[in-house]
Length: 140
Image (tube, rainbow, N blue to C red):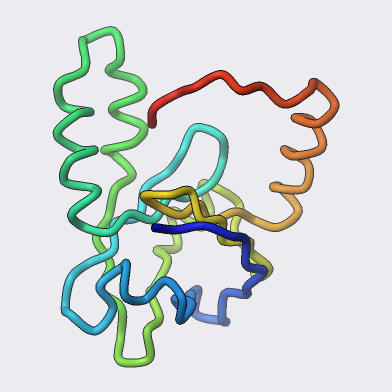
């Protein structure tokens, strides 16, 4: 279970150190990948492999009308293995596509985490607050 918000930094090589409180849930040290993909809101999503397997299967069952969404998510998905220091390399193309630079925010979202550029998240949250937060339920 992922929850909470952490202000983190990517190192000069684009690596993220997986926070200690999330290492067990991501299987760090067990030689299992963490799956990274893009989210339409403009962030990256980090999934434990087992959670991703179910999400990927559900995506593949969507109708043809959802093909752009499926292409967006599956076309961005990549497996990354944490190194011996519990760091994951965020691929340069994914960093560029969502505007990740150095200062990032990792948000626990229950079954997965979102990784945001800190300034972009602040802008998105300001817009959401301006419009008023909604309790509408969406499954991603």
